[in-house]
Amino acid sequence: QVQLVESGGALVQAGSSLRLSCAASGRTFSSYGMGWFRRASGKEREFVAAISWNGARTYTADSVKGRFTISRDNARNTVYLQMNSLRPEDTAVYYCAVSSYSDIRTLVRNYNYWGQGTQVTVSS
Image 1 (tube, helix red, strand yellow):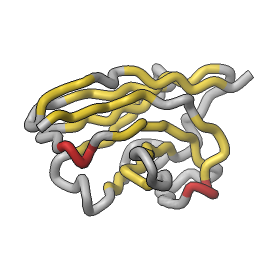
Image 2 (cartoon, helix red, strand yellow):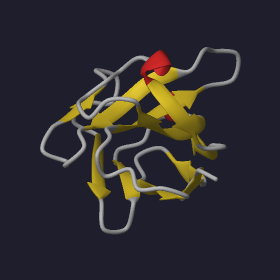
Image 3 (spheres, helix red, strand yellow):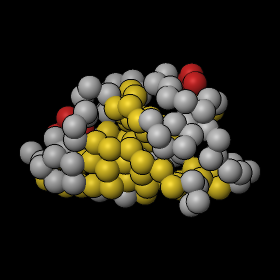
């Protein structure tokens, strides 16, 4: 059974940093791209960052560019999201996902496995 488990979410003050982790089990995802999405209260799920199968290419949304970095460790079947200079508008539930493709994808429909999410709350 495929399982993605996110961790690292917390309540922090604006300007702080957090590192989210997503551990995958049940199969190996080293051939597939992975991504992070978030859903703020009352809003739709939105793309945050994506990484190609081997980590050679990454892409981040404009709203987090320069502050968030996605990385992966295929030996550990884990993907990370380093979040710096956090802002109150970054408050959301953050989800990791595995793509159906090996390259960068930004649309929800291109991802077929999802974690349960981890809450990030940034206070002003």
